[in-house]
Length: 414
Image 1 (cartoon, rainbow, N blue to C red):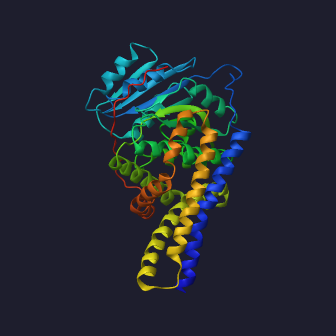
Image 2 (image 1 turned 90 degrees about the horizontal axis):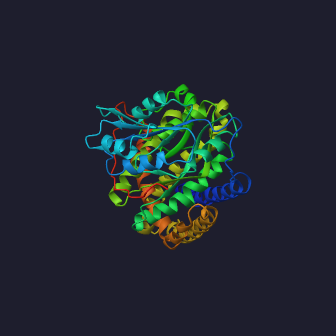
Image 3 (image 1 turned 180 degrees about the vertical axis):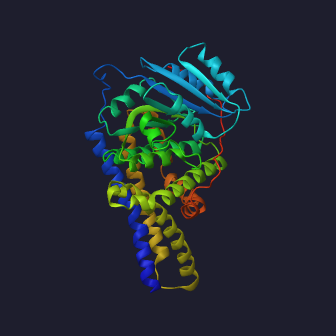
């Protein structure tokens, strides 16, 4: 019996990354051929006005750059709301100074720290326009991004949110270089694949365009969720809306530069994903939500794969100590080589697709062999440590607090 279980486990562990990589590659290529092109043509009646929300807490090192880029956007009618969430530093002052008296900028300061979700909900209620862009305080939006996002959304009245395309700007060491590869080879391909069926699972807070009424209709952001953007994306989908992806809507973002900060980020992401599975998985299983089955299946399947991988490592240890005839160690070596080849193939295709948006990302290819070992280990450990328990416990009742480490940004607006 143990032998049969081990073989089934090995088959799942072996096939899951191969199958998902094949799906992402095929989906990325299909999107590139069929749907990637966006000329951002002005819609009939002109460009609709857009509100830009930038939530901030103790962001004095980076907020000025974010505000300058937002005010320099190539868009005829925008308002920019900086939502200062009870900062104890000079965030509000730096944001106001960066605006230079521009009437399109409003700094909304709350003396009480209530959390990012609460600030964004206030921003959606306060925004004057139906279309709302959400961005992070440590990011800078490319000038053409709003038109591209709006153009993509205008393709269908069913689209409630469009995800932008984040690219790493602080490429200073191996850790940030590997995250550059992640943004291209994993996030980019996944979002392209999901966009083919209108089911982008995460319209991330770093850059997304939303229909204000749709967000308010589903209750806005949930302040209990560790990843409020994943939660909102799922609720929009469950409400019958579609979500999409615009690869040409670029935004520069700052990523963790140390293992400690990277681990904290991955644990938060894993916790949020687990909370979403706990909250909505039974709802997703209903027939009327069948269009969510692929998204939910991939999310649950990745967690099961991590658990299975951990179990296989335990079995490998038993195999080595007991001398059993379960060929886990030899299988593991062969599988590791095969998966590394597949990962490099996926990375190569992703870099080719994404080259026009980020030509320098190709330089990170030389770190590609380190990606499966280093990042899979970190992500798998975070899933075991945080996602699994969150699936069982669900979100906590208390509000999620800000957890950020910032480095100064000095990129001028262009």
